[in-house]
Image (cartoon, one colour):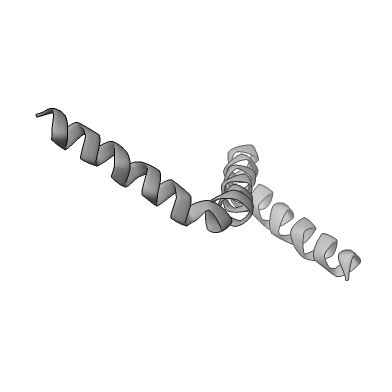
Length: 64
């Protein structure tokens, strides 16, 4: 299966290079890294992060 994934990723990168040049590949890689971070870090920790943000908002509002 990894060979198929590699072929698909290679085809996408080749199409991006032909269509948009180096910067197209660069932005696709940046988007892939952001997607990986969201999948691996944000999804499992979403509830904790949202609680942390709500606590900070309460502290700011209490200080007014």
